[in-house]
Image (cartoon, rainbow, N blue to C red; front, side, top):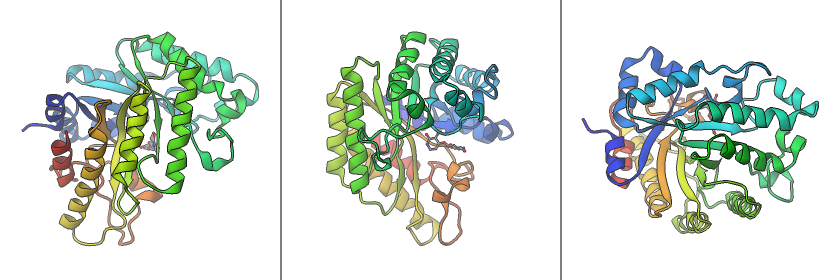
Length: 331
Ligand code: XIL
């Protein structure tokens, strides 16, 4: 049967999904579904600091190496995720930051990791979740341990180190809650645009914006606002990717066909709006099958009726859902 990767490729788009190695290790059917559906694999945790750097002097590359091996065997590419984030930090990092070693550990980490996979990981989510205009800083940046230690130049450093380590890689800023029409998300969009503009003005090598797109039915969606925002990002000469798509349906009551159709309809409106722009190059979901969504272990994944979320394109039996169809139709 045809997979989303082929449908997307025929429209010049790359489709893929995040992958936790543990979820496929003992699940050959799920592994086969990734092969059929995905041209891009994103390590769900293996390229985060907590996965790669258990201790200051220790890099643990076995997970990422294994993922690259899987991708090579199946003609897939890997998007690296992620190099500068305030979460998934091993305990030694905040200590090192307090000891004034931030510049050294960040540049060393990025040189080592991006350099090891030079020419083999074509896209990196270099910076993840950099803006939080509700957290009090005038520039709208998130006051992370990195930012407190190094100031906004931690962002410059991350992108510059990544560029130096692999001049051919596409370098992304990846951020969340940019999709809806709420006043907070409006501030978030403005903060992202301002950040991208200032980075570019300073000569920082950023190539694109990732919209995480953890969608939730019931939030206020206004296609004109989102369409204009993507146009503004594209107008800066940047590319855009949908990076972590999934759809929460806590607000939908009813049987499973009703819920699955609501999820697909919500995603369709979003995808049609974003994919209308030629600067949009790729779509990846945060998981492929409802077997393995991170939402099953997250408060945002809770439904009032206690039923599990159905946020991804394949159901727990790995059958295509209406969301799968919506993706194929949108490409
Ligand atoms: C999540 C993973 O899916 C979980 O398994 C992990 O426990 C926490 O991180 N935004 C991101 C991703 O950029 O890295 C997050 O991934 C989900 C939200």
